[in-house]
Length: 148
Ligand SMILES: [Zn+2]
Image (cartoon, rainbow, N blue to C red; front, side, top):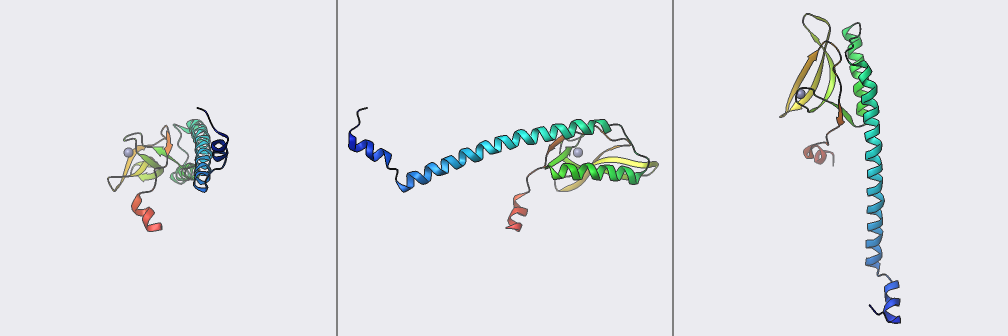
């Protein structure tokens, strides 16, 4: 396509609107690249934690209090990285807890989650179950609106 000197001069001068849109495009690319990088890092963090926690599978500590402390420490670590354990029964993201149970001295490990708006506990092993990690679900819109 032939170009006259005047039209190529016009091409070099971007309108304010064009400049804004190319800055917006550049920002989108930068943020998109960053998001991909973060997703990769997040995956590495998730798999590393999952791998290390696997060493605790099948364990029960000496008392309910100690099991609770272990479950709480695991949850706090996961929460700080935006993670949850995945319920082994239903697959929902859950919080690991140690709960008292009649006849079981050191309590049982349960998956604590909300299913169809009801707080539900699954699991119930006397030893730490195998833990699969998943991303923490996004907050519901209603609570987002309440914050804003
Ligand atoms: Zn479940």
